[in-house]
Image (cartoon, rainbow, N blue to C red; front, side, top):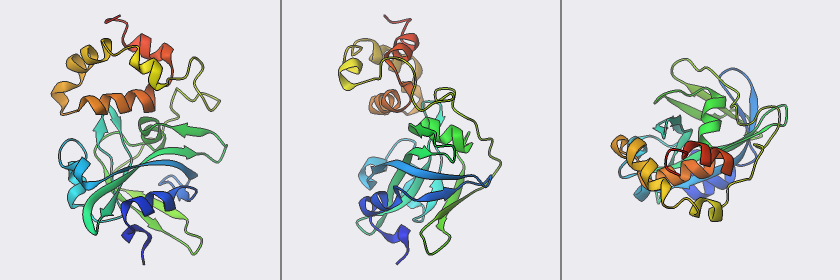
Length: 203
């Protein structure tokens, strides 16, 4: 059975640890993924996934960042997806966060493509329509982690009054839920220092 005919949760587990060849020939290792079931994709930027074949790639922009989604089956139906949120490069740099992974691969808008198994070892290859411009996310620099105080749920909760104001001004018109904003904060804002810098007009 094809890897991508597995149900979403089994696929997510199977993807972690696999090598993925990017369109520029670079090989990365998938280190972290998130699963989104069909019911979570009924509306919002992930909705096109509902009709995409398993293994198809879609890169919607969420909060200004292009996400790396792989379509998956959910209970035998199309509409689930796995989001790649962590990779390790050949130089052993770890890129974490959906937005950072998308930037590293080179996604910059709603592109489509496919991930396929290319050998008996289960290694994968990504093909994408259009031109990619890979970028090393500034947040990783020459190391693995951002410098500063890592964000935790407790720290995020300290800004419970300011985050809704930020959401109302920058996110609400773009068909983005408040939960999307919180996920963006967890994945891509990195440290308390960066969070405070982005919210400085509301503090």
